[in-house]
Image (cartoon, rainbow, N blue to C red; front, side):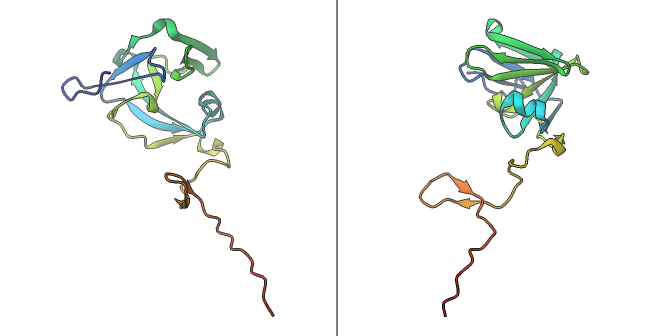
Length: 156
């Protein structure tokens, strides 16, 4: 697997099954969290974090035959036909850019996600940074303890 090299100034990544490998030149142009309903459905998560790069700074290293594309009015989404991993989002209004899910990269991309798009579309069930504590007996599981206190029945 290719990892980011300080000398090369690149970040590599790919799909879950390894059929598709991609690479970008560093740094990425920008990174953001997309809370829109369309991206939430395409990625099946509360929000997706994207990295945007100029197409001239993006390379597909492996797997062209494993990529399937879906087009709609917003643009074209690509995914791996073998494992279903979402790979690229090419917005119709930005034909020179390509957006890649940040989770695909094995190393840093030179940009931290500091922007939120369509935050008003965020679902009510998404975590909003509330305080969480460890769940006793379940290592690695955190939970949002209810703020409502149990009503105690007075004893007379």
